[in-house]
Length: 563
Image (cartoon, rainbow, N blue to C red; front, top):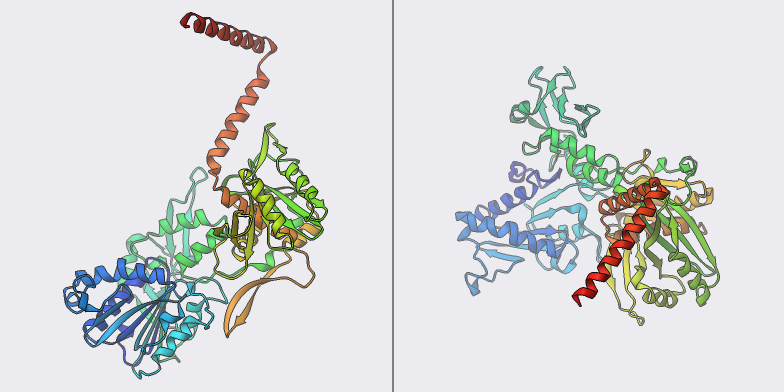
């Protein structure tokens, strides 16, 4: 906030973890300009919906509860003549507009002196280009403009906030050690802990000083922060102040809690990524080099059928011009998965016979290692090929078995499980998928090296060709209208049916929305029952049969007497 009032500073960038008062920084700055230096202000949120939420949940309460602002910004409900709406507030000498990065029209048509970007890494490019560029163009008429960028970072190479921070003077907060007095930045690498084998989480956590190796605990944090100071990492920049801070500085989040959250997230790259972005306030760096065919081939295991760890089956079906390819996956706790088998049904999908073969396969029972029978609970079938109508007809006819037509859509930032529609002549349910998000999740899980949450198992039936198809696509950075975007691509002619089938089987699991823990308990109970039946002697079974027959006879006599 001090940098925002510095006449030498034109732009302020704040790279942060979550819940570190980033939004409060923007609110306080808005309040200052309304009260002390009235100006035209624009704050850009990732979407118009988020802009409305910001206005209702954050801005309005601040204006209502701050007496010097209450009379300056009239509530739209207080008077019809105020001209104020949810997304536009007028005050003497200026106005405040809340816009969405997904709505180019809300960024245009007005000169702006104070420009604020909130959660910039959630912005998506529009047909008109980069929303930040569109909004920045509105400040060109002001010699004393101020631009504020606030966000938690996401991915390396495409992070907008990281790009702005690198263009700044790159300040970080240095704190003194209570023991030796040496200054340092609080970094995750210096957080240490001890964990007993019988304990689920570490119980003793401390911060180790880089200089004297002193064990610093929570009681030292307040004093360290009180006497800390911001230091520039790039002092040659004089008009752009950049700040970076992580959750280790937060006095509302203990180091022990941070370690526990890391302990829960570390086994799955998809959850670890969230932890890195939101706790450390750092960009996520993909480990692409880890995923190689020869390393995946070493994962082959000797299980047959459905192994003990798996208890929920789904299938993914890819439609080709001359065949249907189907992959069955077994799922366990925390979405640990097992490749069960792959089947190819030769024949044109334009004929009914190949679909009948697929149906017979999808409805058959699979043998579990425990002796119980399992059935496929959900199937996703690609409908974007040349046989869309045939796919729709098949899925519509067998919707009761959760056989769902899907259509994948590429593009960074799209949700894996998107919208549903029946807008087709067959009125079949069509599920939209953000396939880039699914591929990232699968690739992240392929980097997990130890069995556990998210780990992917493969049996001896998996060929090198299957692993090749599974890793054929690579994420890369391409520039669209001058702005970097992360896309997935493969070489021309390379086959990727295995990856597509894995994506569809994972989508089927998500769409089933199954309680895996409850299903696992029911399976364990069924296995126990089968084990008890096996241990019973022939005499015990004969006695149970005799007792059951006697009970039935008694019930019949009672029914006759009552009648």
